[in-house]
Image (cartoon, rainbow, N blue to C red; front, top):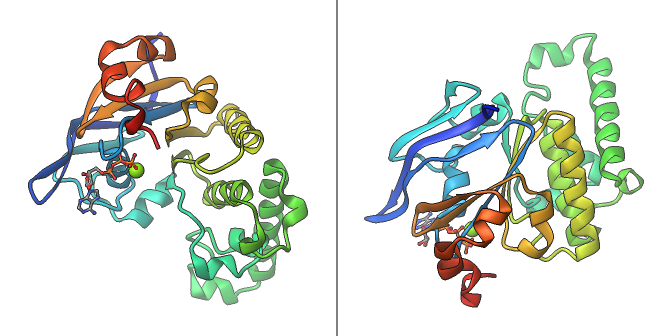
Length: 256
Ligand SMILES: Nc1ncnc2c1ncn2[C@@H]1O[C@H](COP(=O)(O)OP(=O)(O)OP(=O)(O)O)[C@@H](O)[C@H]1O
Ligand SMILES: [Mg+2]
């Protein structure tokens, strides 16, 4: 069966003062699948997702989302199209409650000043609160709705980050190390919710080092080294790939 890609990069490159942080990267993210990017520290994984989501400008190549060229669009436009990169909740927002964090997430919230003074204002407000609660319920953190974010555990904060992406109607969620520092039980909880979201039409592009936990949730893997994709495939092919073992799996120093 032919793969249905929601996002593709074509020869994507990003240079920092002569350093080829990304060097002609071609990846494809299949619709309703979870695509994992792995590789040693400094291999360009974070640079790749920052370039896809518009936080870095590409020097060469293209990013195609749903058949549309989105290369170097500003991050808010890319996010509005449905490509949402999650971020750690910034300090000022940590003083807000869980619910408030969701309500400040949608970009178009109160975008139209005139509309926001109109008679639909209250109705809109109610709809956002309702949507936020549905998302919190889905993520299993609705009981924490009035808790300030700084009081949440690391794993609960990760769920809140995902909740903020869902508020923006993300079609493709891009997350850098979603289970780093999260205990195994909550990690599995987060990842099984990703699996459920896949069935609801959300696709994922994830960077993660914790292979012991994440591999069972992954549909396809890209391996990067020194700014290039050195291997791609399903778990079995990747784990037995000699190059991958050499640069990443075998090198304990490569994982953190
Ligand atoms: N803003 C920047 N300015 C200059 N160099 C950068 C910048 N961002 C990344 N780099 C460099 O690009 C290379 C790739 O870094 P990147 O953060 O993408 O790696 P990574 O694969 O995410 O590593 P890790 O697993 O440690 O998170 C590194 O050599 C890094 O120092
Ligand atoms: Mg990184």
